[in-house]
Length: 232
Image 1 (cartoon, rainbow, N blue to C red):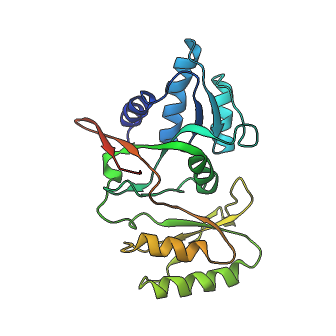
Image 2 (image 1 turned 180 degrees about the vertical axis):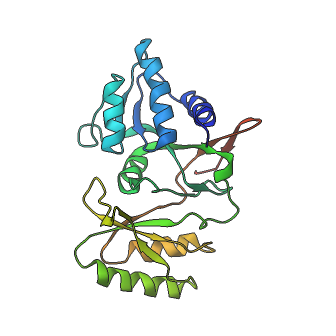
Image 3 (image 1 turned 90 degrees about the horizontal axis):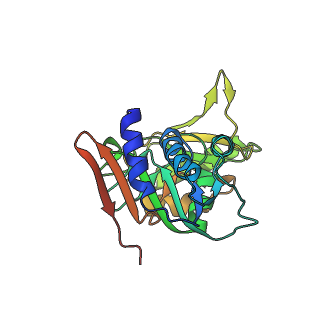
């Protein structure tokens, strides 16, 4: 996704933000574009307070003088805006390519409304081509991996879990956990898989964001498309 498309999607979503709002602020390069656009409005006198979903996003917000809070101080948010690695027509998403999906889901769940920004190549018929991130506790992760294998097989999926690493060392999330990336190819029953993962001992959170987003702004060569979903 080009910087121009990220900026277009971010600025379209910014139209959803009202003065005085309590915001959930996402993580990733597209979220960075949103933070920068928001920073311009704040510099012009716009008032918001935000809960960032990562240390990376928090640092950028501070650099741009965007006021921050926490979910302890502000447990209910008006709106959360974040990117996605995949999104389907019902606005179900796979998130977590940047490893922040645990905090992203906590923040999105604390918001009355959740809006996704992405480029139109992220729109898919069936989720799963992008590897599904599964955040797990490092202790006992070998045993957790075996439980994940059994879950995949029960759902007719090939057990294809890869421990996310950088320079030969397991990547640690901001919360200190590790991530297995599941390369399923396609997930015919994301709701069923999500329920199984939710019940798996050792799994902290997964990147299936189902029935959460109410709106998505997808930027492409011809402009920004706005998709909506009925979450009533």
